Image (cartoon, rainbow, N blue to C red; front, top):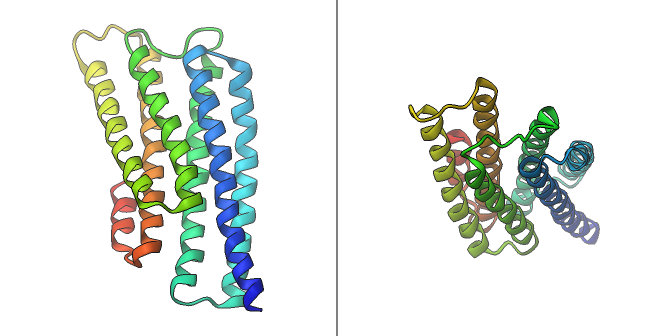
Length: 222
């Protein structure tokens, strides 16, 4: 029974990595769809989100079965509880990627990125893709240095998010209402994507320390 239990715990980690890899593909394609107004790529992202949702649900069912049948304690319990919470955050990251892709689809054949903000969104998208890549590495290795790198990348996304609002609220902004709404939503989706990655990084650190307070504070703040 103990061997079966340890195998189930390993399977939880493997499934988290698998979902994170799907999220990385989604945000990569979503950024391409948004910056290049590629409706075909946008459709792929939207369709892929259903797969992410299904994989997250399957993981949750496995975790609940482990809780019910194995009654884990101490660090094993932390692993299962963390997997449930990380799964939820990954699912939300998939949603953010889908929302970005939907903006591209809605505006097609027009360009979704408002004039004057192209470079800002290009950088924001590049960082989100890098965060997603680091997240896969983090879930595979649980390296605390990678967790810190994700948090540093998030700080830059926050700066870019703030700069978008500064521009939209300035007297120099001459964009139409549609462009203003698109920029507001897109910036928020990019920022929330990074926020969820930081939340996951906190949870991975929790596994190492057993201290949940930091992760809870992150959830409350976001």
